Picture (tube, each protein chain N blue to C red):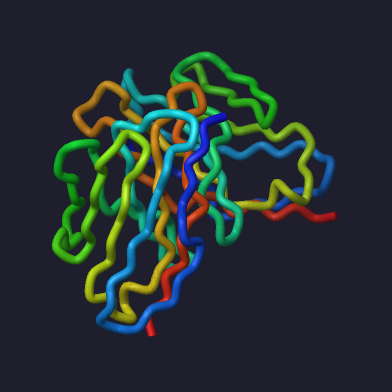
Length: 113
Length: 114
């Protein structure tokens, strides 16, 4: 899977929007962009994923650049429960490594009351 | 959404003994499951891919004789840490692809070998 680059940490205030960036300049045409988050001592939790178009769900929005070399996870109103490590992962659903998710270091999001 | 149930959540065992961790898909069938290991303040590292009815595929550097994986049904995969040693102490997490809901993960097992 292609590599992604994320800031090590970000901070936000409660009830404010949060934009978590991810760079993936070597993304291939069949790579999906996945976002997961992990709270302390828990398994990761699916947040959102997309291929080319922006995506919205009840948890977040995913904005994908036109050239797909970067994306942004948007939490519209951060809550204290959103404090977690956020992972941006590229997954090639059409490749021989089907199924494997390769985790980077992620972004530690701190939310202040 | 699709749920993966992982047990036990934490286990303490003596050095030299074996520990089995179970991962069940509760409301979907998982042909393939994945096992990860996570050390403190580190990211998840894929250990192996578990395929129903066939042998698991291990990542480079992971000892297949030490980390035994069995995927006997479409809803159950197990990871057995054999002859555990303190350096095997870690957080073990299983995962499965659900389709619409992406990958779903178990809640993890904290293994402490004393």
